[in-house]
Length: 365
Ligand code: SAM
Ligand code: SF4
Image 1 (cartoon, protein in one colour):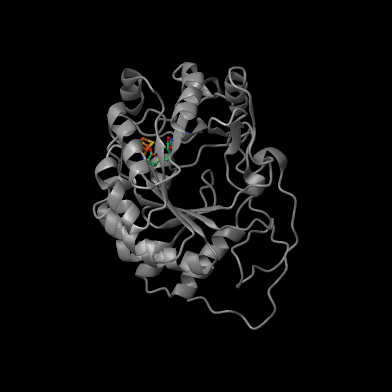
Image 2: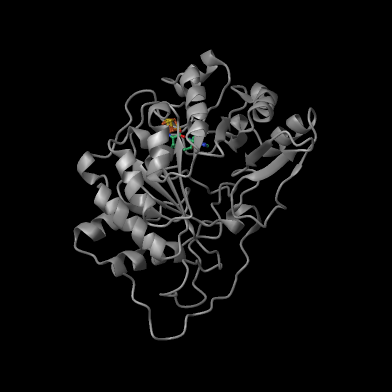
C-alpha cells in the first residue's frame, strides 16, 4: 500500500477554477509539489473521492446518443481488467480516500459474474457502492446485488412511450426497465434514480411526463444534457435541451425549489423538490452550466486507464502498470498523478474544443 512520506503534507493553494468549465483544457502548471499523502487532490484544491469504474465496454443496447447501431469496436477481452485487477484498484482508491464507487460501462450487468464482483468490492468499505445500468438485466439479480453490498442504482430510461423507447435505445424494452425499477426498490436498492438523456426534437416533449412520473413514483428523475460523447459523432447544439428549459417546463406545472444551494454539493445534478412535497427532480447541465469547479470524479475505463475527466484524452494505463509488476504504491502514485494533471474545466464551450477520442460507452459514464 502507499507509503507515507516523513515530511509534512504539502498545502496547496486553492486556485480559482474557470467559470463555465473552460475556457481551456490545457494542463495547469502545478503551483506546488504533488502531495504523496492525504486525499487525492488536484492543483485547484478539488478533492477526489468519487470513482466511476467501468467493468465492460460491451452492451446489450445501442442507444442512439451513445453507440452506433452496427460496427462498434470493442476492446479485446484479454485487455479488459480481470476481477482481481478491479478489486485491487478499488482497494488502492479506497486507501486514497475514495468513499463512493460507481460501477458502470458499457452495461455493467452484461459482465459475467458481476454479483461476485460486487460482493468483493462490497467488503472494501465504500460508504456508497452504486451502479448505473440500462436495467434490461436487472430485475432477476436485484436482490442478489443488494445482498452482495450494492447500495443503490441509477437506471437509464429516456422515454415513457414504448415505441419511442425502443427506437432510442434500439434494442430496449420499456416494460422490462420499469419492472427493473420495481425490483430494485423491492430489493432495497433505494433511492432509484432515473437518468433521462434529452435530445431536442426527439424526446423533449416528455419533460412534463417525466415530472409526473417523478411525482407519482417517488423516483428522482435526472435530466441529462446530451454531451458530445456519442460514437457516431452526431452531437450538435441543435440537439441540446438546456437544463434551464427543463426547470421552466416543469416549474410551470408544479412549483419547484432547489434542494441544495448551488455550489455546495459536488454532485453534478442540481436537485429540485416539488414544493408540495411530492418528489424530486435533478438536472445535469454538463454543457450549459458545467460543474467543473466542484468536480470530485475520477474514472477508470474497462481496460484499466485512469481518466481525470470525461472530456480529456489524458489516460494512464493502470492495467499495464499492474501487469508489469507495479506495486500498490506505484498504482497510488499513478492515481495521484492523474488527478494532479486535471485541467480546470472540460472546455466544451471553448471554440477549439474537440470531442475526446473515446466515446461514452468506452469511457464509462
Ligand atoms: N449502460 C448503462 C446505462 O445506460 O445506464 C451504463 C453506462 S451509460 C454510458 C451511463 C450513462 O451515460 C447513461 O445514463 C446514459 O444515458 C448516459 N449517456 C450515454 N451517452 C451519453 C451522451 N452522449 N450524453 C449524455 N449522456 C449519455
Ligand atoms: Fe449501452 Fe448505456 Fe450506451 Fe445505451 S447508454 S448503448 S445502454 S452503454
